[in-house]
View 1 (tube, helix red, strand yellow):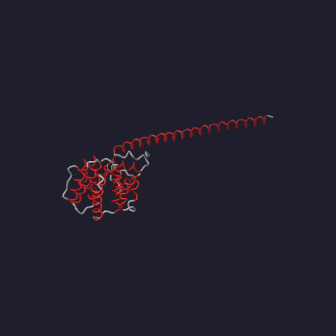
View 2: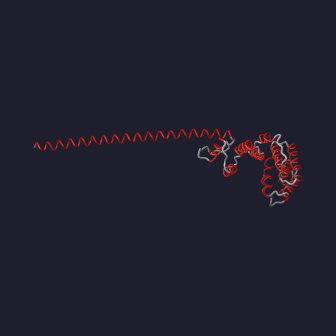
View 3: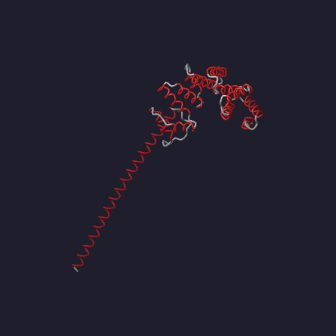
Length: 267
């Protein structure tokens, strides 16, 4: 019987020891789990805070570089990377420039080309910046950028006046626009750009025959028909209704196949 008690006692003590060991093991496992969970939670909070900070920075950069129209607010957006490069003065790639154009973000492009001009003093960059401001619907900034700019390089000088003329057309200052276009033609008579500008100006005023004459001249000088048609369409978007209808009717009568899109402006 004594031997039996000894065995039973030993077994009970072992069970107790095993139970305590299991409890300790469970306690350590829970502690490790809690520590790992706390670490994960801390990392999650840190990541969330970093993402919030990045989103705030993205918003600030959008405002700074006139890119608010881009609705994606994710820091993973290619725009965030591009704007960060802008902000520190780092050059961007041609692929990134093409991406900005593809999504219609001309405000950042205007800033980019203006910075390039400040680095290089290359007036072509200033013309590109002014042109981008026009596409961003800010013609006043375009005009301000090119005021007083001149050069002996005829094609560049002509481009300056053509761009200014386009900006004057955007704000409805038709007389100044025409003066700029004619000055550009005088500087470089073989360039089709100022003729496109004059054609657009006359169409916008409802002067169909004068406008068509200028567009015909532009095509003779190398403007592609599709380019001319795109210019006409953008002009009709800006024209007053009465002029819009007059030009649309004229185009459909002139060539109903080429200008079938003009019927949209008669609705």
